[in-house]
Length: 233
Image (cartoon, rainbow, N blue to C red; front, top):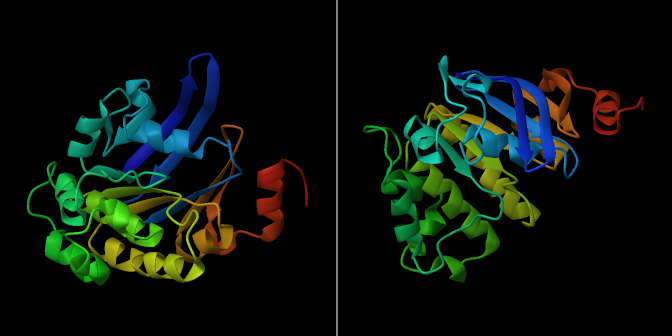
């Protein structure tokens, strides 16, 4: 469904990605791991059109999308849950969710009722300002907002960052339901164990390059250590 071919990305004179090759099949969960500064967020920003690239560097269902704007990428069914949640502070929970539904793809699975079924606490807090919620509840709103566009590919950037373990568990418990709706998931995650527990395949980045690509069930601790630090464990 999604493929990157020799993907490069830069911020001015600083080159952040060096020839990334990656694939995501329909319905699968792919985890992207790596140390801070490895290029994980830049990879997601490139896929979503926040950073422009060569057209053929990113393919969606065989079509080149590397040079498309972010709104056109979203219209194709690719949505992102950004690091830090980034809710609209002046809007209520429900208004934040409805913003995500403004670029909808047909009459797909996700609606306000489905989001509230996925995260029941949001129904209770639907009239509250987004800033009045806990960090975990804000993360649920950010996920729900992205799902409201009925994406076929959901990109999640550090959805567990800064949250309590019990909240992380609840958020990760929603992933099987999201995948059952037909969406593939790309998950950038610092918690390697958590990522491996839900992913079908894993890519490790180091300094803008892929240093490991394997099925999650086949990865060893030694391989991860070598991929992170560029040396044998």
